[in-house]
Amino acid sequence: MVGKALETLFIKVWVIVKLNLFFWLFSCCGLIVAGVGPALKTVNELFVSHEFNYKEITLKDGWNTFKKNFVRGNLLFYGLGLLLSILAYNLFLSVQIQGMAFLMIDFLLVFAMIYGIVTYQYTLLLDSYYEIGLKNLLKLAFISTLSNFTNLLKIAIGVSLIVFITWKFKGLILFGTVSMIQIWSFTATKSWRQTIDQRLELHA
Picture 1: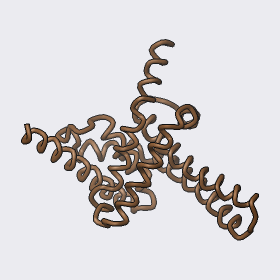
Picture 2: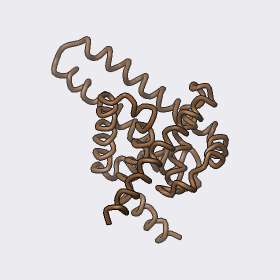
Picture 3: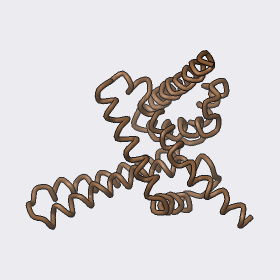
């Protein structure tokens, strides 16, 4: 019993490490600037497709997925980057001014940044599950974050905790941080994806 539990643990750790190394490899293939977005999408899609079946997560499959996701991955990633840049600049301006009204604005801007990151995680997951146009993907991701506030909190808190642990253990940047965020987002949104599937079956 203990041996089986240890084997399961090692498999999960290996999948986390493997996916994270794939992320950095594919990011470098895109010279970082054009590689991070598609690499994130590739890691997400590989896990959605195979979960902890480590033998099915291959470099060849990953490379083909990376090439397929190159344009869309960059569009989603830099769309998020533009949104966060605008919000961060406004937050920088807002914190320069004192007053209760501007404190409320600061809070709203921070929440909007968190909301943007969570919505981005939803776009990666939903795009891995369904064949859907970009416009409808963004709509579905937006609706998903609004439909279940608990899942939004789960993702936000989970990502924050992973980033905090990474701050304490820098080696995770290479071996685990990115893949753990993707896997946590997958786990936290499982109930909502099941709800979507049920509604699709009803309208089929």
